[in-house]
Image 1: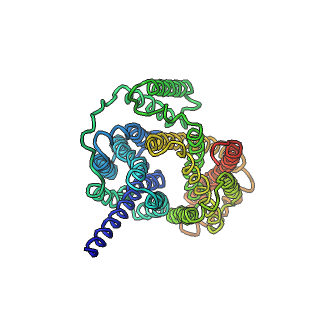
Image 2: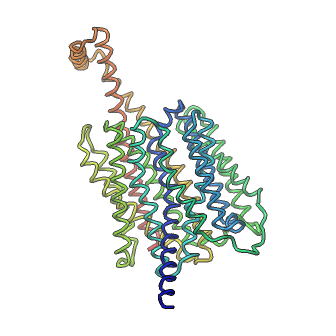
Image 3: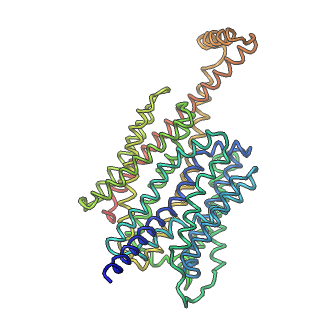
Length: 514
């Protein structure tokens, strides 16, 4: 009898550990796919023959699908239960991933990224909300650890895996990287997650509110996607999209505030601590995503590092973050006041950005690794304390609604910062390139001497005089473009350092999260 009870207890403990690992895996799947997609974006763009402006449609499609799924997350789980809901979401994600891997045109890639987004939008919120529903006491703390490990392990694996797959010869392979964990998560969700509760009253779909939100998100995403190209050519079009999107979004929020059965429970979330946390979340994700967009361009195109080396560096940053997460989990209880830690995190990020802005061409990669190691501290010292404090006054009853709102904020911050990074970087690159081209050109005595020496090298290697001179000029143009890219990225890092300091001032002034 005693042996049977022990075996049963071990079985239950093992099943709970599997559930914890499953929730971390489901969350990690979306992060892994997104990290790989962003890292390999330029190669995917070349593979389908899309211009940057056209390719932005595929990026926006995922965001729109994800936001629509997030806003309907609470309604969906009440109607279908977490097992069916997440199994359907994982199936859609897998279909979208397979479709992306076979896409040969922008249209098909956009369609399947949208399907991916609908599926992937369910993962983060649902997995985190399930933790307080399924685990109590010490088990809950352990489940949160598994959840965080799932998120941050994707940053360790994703860049190197993407670089390896692209370097093997085909951009199509990038999409296959997330398939094995997605299939494993689908199998685990089907067998381990709970069914829907019986006797739950069916709620209306609230199609009016959903369409209003979808129209608002579509306008804002189109504006963000086109900003980098139309900010000077078609400013009124952008203003119309931005104004229309904001008006629709405000209309949606008013509709939800007054509705007796809202999609978003705004009245419950009108809490000063929660709203302060959302604001800090937005600033953190804006900095994090801006930096994530900037570093691969800075390292590969500015410093001229090979793609696989950039993948190793990005994955090293993920490993540094993972180690910092482990240290935070072990020692954070000894620091009851988290505000100084958050402030220190923003100052560390500002220092890292300033460090990158000083790197010369041809710098040894170990100098970059110092910055990447400290950058990992920023992610942990800011977002984990914010995550632990934001929901403190909501309680378990409204935690799901709070996390739903947080992930909407995360997706909007990610989209906004990507567009802003692209606009500023492109504008600065053009300005620097024009300045360099004004002095570095044929006719300048020093440049003519350099061209003559390089052309002579080409002639010694069997090129004709015409070919040698053309090759020398092409090499000059390449170096000017690379130098312009590097200087523009360094300017962006200075802007980002200033924004990190501004975020630190916000943290220092606010009094709700301590």
